[in-house]
Image (cartoon, rainbow, N blue to C red; front, side, top):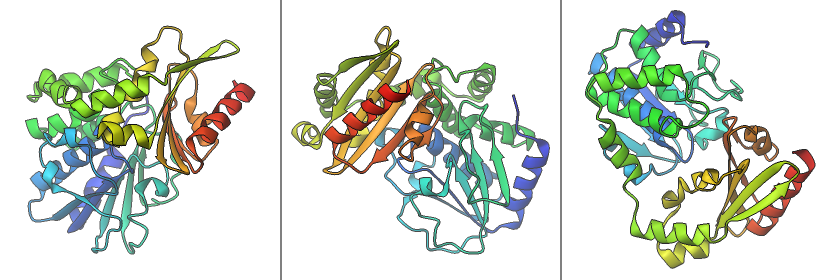
Length: 328
């Protein structure tokens, strides 16, 4: 496993030390890993340098169930960063488009690119790139940075990192989970993290409307046989959202349900965002779905990826299934 190096950490610390104005951001549609990692970095830098100006920005709203995380109130939502900064730390963005464009107007900023996607193109950060695809989560990279930098991890920082770790490993059940994941978890628990409380906040805060939406989505479940592969598909329409009074965040983990069906090779969830905009999520235990998502400009992890296709839901489903029949 290619771990974070002392040289990388030394360079990062030097950048932080000479920068008075720092911002942290991550990918669109932020999840627990990128939010937890951003908050942990914020808390650690603030702990070391109380007088530095540090801001956290995201392009999209952060899921409501993450409000329990320390310093959550410090997160700002914006479509464009307009303040001047010397240093920008970009988390989990395999290319610049994943930021939503909020950094596009910035000038004279030194960027640090920290990511665990193996498809990272390194096209927006030439100063310092800490890219470690072997890590199951970005939170684990941040944990190793703190350890090498001898930064004390208190309970608040540990809560943020553990939340990122537990979600990006599927509660330590997904195929990306490894020895380092458990090593990190052990250390974070020793810092005061209470796993059951994290679980309750992350996974046991479903809304009634969200459960109604889930029932409608599951009613669309379909199994398609393509040679030796069983593909599970389901979809969500805007009409389903309005009729249940739920929102897109309620559907965040729906993709995981078809993966629990015995024999399913690939799960696909089609979400209608507009009449000609469809978000597609892919999951698998052994099929490289990142390659599939890349066909339409998407990406992510090898076994968990997504893409937005600017066509109507019916056409997108047809296109994706046709492509799978040609390539699987």
